[in-house]
Length: 342
Length: 297
Image (tube, rainbow over all chains, first blue to last red; front, side):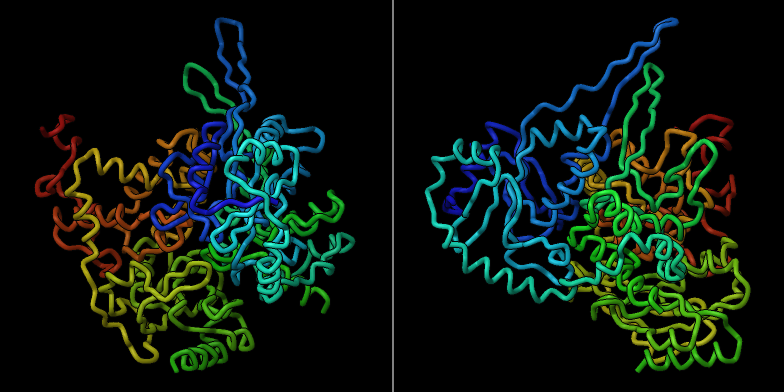
């Protein structure tokens, strides 16, 4: 365990930014998102959640895969180089760093996604404990501890001090690199703060959810549940929930013709959109009810079925606070659990 | 209390068989969580709420519902009634298949993390204090508010140098994540198939290859709703990235007012819209087609 004065944080980040790209939460135009750090950029660690999850550092919304050019009868294909720049994300939260582990179970299992893998190897996650979990948070329902972030470097802000603990080899070498800013600290220094966080977290309104009721042996029953009819009714079919979600992971592959060449890229897809899973024969999910159901069945049933019971939600609450029609995974879980048994 | 009156009236109409369902709001999981809902039974109607958190404009939900049999009851705030009227004008809602109960509005609260105390921007500039269409009004009509001019922001932008204005919009629109919430919530965005959903062209909805495309999406949308946008403010309310989309729409409204005289979309459905009432002789900007293919320079 190490610590430093919060006042020295900008200088430390400036030093870090000489070694790698550093992304920090920044408030701009009334909202907080991750932005590149350079000297003078004001870091906002007080706001609990960024609007966007940090997943796009590993799974960018748009990613070029290759370009192709035809010269006479020949076609030359130029693959996109794998990302190779080291970078760090400073100040992400326990829920979002857990979100990356869920993306790992998809993108790092065979066949491994090389682009994602390269970014995971190059990226250092520095995660900050949540001093003040808010009513829309429900990470504890997924056994995520907001007082003990899992990351390369875990951090705690306690009375003007920033405490840091390396949790991986990458994290350790970074701390060594930054050793002139840090001094040794005792792990007991943060115990009181951790206790306070856990006490607040224990009072979260949705801290416990009846997830055990959604076992995959009920797959067909849940799929055919009459509740979907009611649940989806006011869904506007926008992509807010899927695009802000730290674990929504679907992508589409498209070609962009510039006249001179074809650019093949992939981009985030959303099961809320009308051409989601569109295939040559047509679409297998033609109604918004089916697409709405897909999102929640994927998170609560299909993903756990394929990944040892791991539910693909981290309780960040972005869908709770941002859905224009106020539909969200909590309402789905509660509805499926209560009514399906009747 | 207005909420009780609304529930009572909705129940009467449902019992009498005059309506088959009702569009309103119900209590979600927080005191601030008043979510749009469709009620089909007396029991469901018990959950109807009406408070300052009922921000969602229900007019657009009627576009889909309207295809079904029977009359629908809808609760409309004064500003929502403009959207409703505009949809009737565009033949997307059959007026005779909807029963409208007009309800008063003191403004809606802007929520962040489901908390908030301040009014939405649209409510700070609201002058739509009376319903333009309804079958009956229920409860006290507490609609009067001190409103500042809705064009203040547009004026500021107009006074900027073109470079600074471009910078402003570039910063705003580059935040866009193409979630399409502004489009999907917008009562004026009602194309059966949006050009940005058409995967046969490079106009696909999901992502942009460059920031230029985000700008194109918003500018085309603004052009397409020009003359029809009632300034209901739903686009700015739902944008997760807080893009000030209302400024784009209000620029068009302000220009239309200047060129064609004051016009409020949705106010009077018998009137021709300024951009659809075309007269080559008197139109202040008749366009190039009526100039024999030559632009007026």
